[in-house]
Image (cartoon, protein in one colour):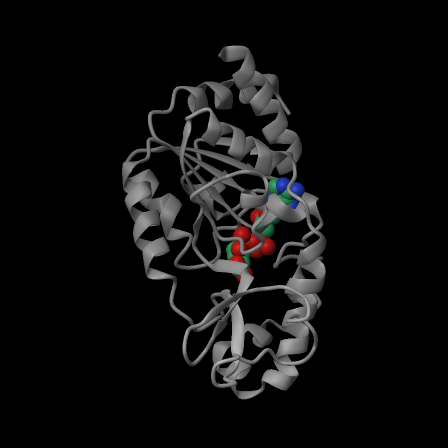
Length: 249
Ligand code: APR
């Protein structure tokens, strides 16, 4: 990675008045969570139809065991990496004003970030599809037995959005408000292929924000809105940028 690029990115981030970050599945790959898309993606091994809300409601005995395997057996072992800690550090330094994530793995919070805007919800809770009761995911809740609500026995689902479900309203509104306010947005590990999430960086760009992108490969954003592209693995690149910001301080 060219040092001038790292230096440039560090300067832009350090001098930001209202820095925001927007993260996708790529930031958690080095924590052992595969991306969703691409050759080794989760959707190359599992049928994404298990996350179709009407199918989940109609065939829970068929879909829940797969959901359990992906999101509670795989995800459960993951620990935050240097990229998650970098964003937590920027927040503690008072530089990062808002963190918007498409991820449901809770790794930002595990790294110490607070007030994370979870655009697709969070896998740490189950919610009743009838009464809305939420319950923290703990053994013995996550077995292959379909989770049922203790109130009236209705079907429970992970508290993240399935295909066919709306974005949580508060997360949608706060994300748009931050995108309109920001002067620098840092994109880490996202394809920009998932709507409506991918609108957020575009709104920031329309507001003339500087877009800094970190990804192992070029994305839709790189070809359209990105000003500074740092090609590489998130943990390694964020570590270099953090060191450079520390030098600038
Ligand atoms: N460091 C940085 N970027 C990486 C790394 C890495 N180590 N590994 C992969 N990437 C990049 C890929 O190049 C790709 O652009 O991360 C992206 C991962 O793509 P997807 O899995 O499709 O993730 P994303 O674009 O964030 O999808 C959005 O879809 O299913 C939903 O909630 C889910 O958050 C997810 C959302």
